[in-house]
Amino acid sequence: MRNFHARLPGLLLLATLAASHASAEPRRAAASTRLEHCGAETCLAVTGRRPDRAAPVLIAGHEVAVRGGRSWRASIPLAKVRLWSAPAARTIAVEAAGPGGGRVEAPLPIGLLGHVTELAFLDVGAGRRR
Image (cartoon, rainbow, N blue to C red):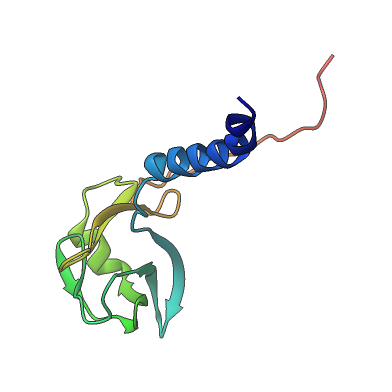
């Protein structure tokens, strides 16, 4: 019994490490978007990571030129983004082709492809009305 108690802390540590390793999920590809000026136009800046610096990057199914290596960046004019996307889309497909690559839906800036609503006025107040 004494030998078991001496080994118990080591066994607990080993069990904890094994459980955390078994539950760890593989790292998923991620991409982010934001608006930027590119010359006289407005562009969608897309950034992401890929497993191989030579892997092609596809945005909405179209191969795009990127700057960078494993961490990359692309700028796409909004006119192209509108052609490639469904009306009122909230995400855009970003894919790193090749082995180990993956496809993710990157969120678009709020209202980017939505319809513009013109307001006659907007009433904003602080506190409660009595």
